[in-house]
Length: 210
Image 1 (cartoon, rainbow, N blue to C red):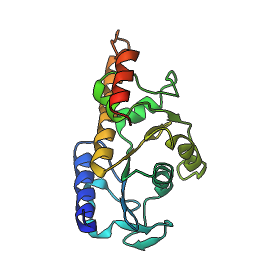
Image 2 (cartoon, rainbow, N blue to C red; image 1 turned 90 degrees about the vertical axis):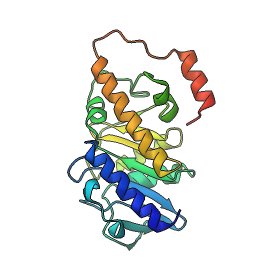
Image 3 (tube, one colour; image 1 turned 60 degrees about the vertical axis):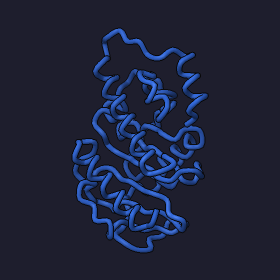
Image 4 (spheres, rainbow, N blue to C red; image 1 turned 30 degrees about the vertical axis):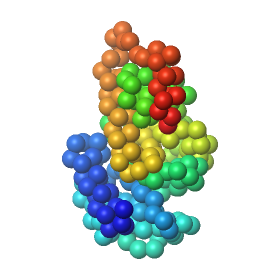
């Protein structure tokens, strides 16, 4: 895919996520790998109104090459890229249901959401909770980095998900699956549920390793 085409796809996915209420205001950011660096959504930019030509282009060292200044949360993306060499894109949202789950007191911090559907297991697998850090705290990068080698998706406490994928499409679709599963989890709280069994989960993870 050419850089121009990738810029257009980032803008198109950003608008889709924004139009469906999965992000709002200037929250959320998207990045995608290039042969010589990354494309990032700019700081204070609405994902619903991205200009492909003004996306931030960074070199391999993270220096701005062209475009507007990158998102202040660039370090979250770089942690994923550096710990997961096969990563082609990273999506970070403040999606309502995922953030709501990240605020709950009684969740398993090693695996936040139950395996309610096969597609959640296939696209997310295990979802650990990263402890709370104030926005911009570089210690958050270290906390994400510590988990990124084993998990392509993490949930930041009182903040939102960070999801890596082999492609832009894979990262976006996995993020959407996480948000829908968070919504299901909240809808079912207080109800007797029937999640997938450990045997069913193991079979899916063997067939669809994340």
